Image (tube, rainbow, N blue to C red):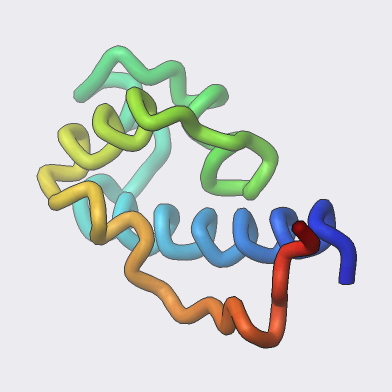
Length: 86
């Protein structure tokens, strides 16, 4: 598996976790927009695994969801199985 495929798989797992966390706080994406400066369509790309958020965006997401940033990465991912080529 090449690095691009590993990144896509990781982003899929990240996006599923983000979606789950957001659904606990806000039942719709529109509420993301009304409770933050995030444009719901822009935020949605992260929930669909299409965006690669910066550290700043990660912090904003955590703040919006009122969670610790590390919770955004609290999902299973076998890095030994999905080794990134160096």
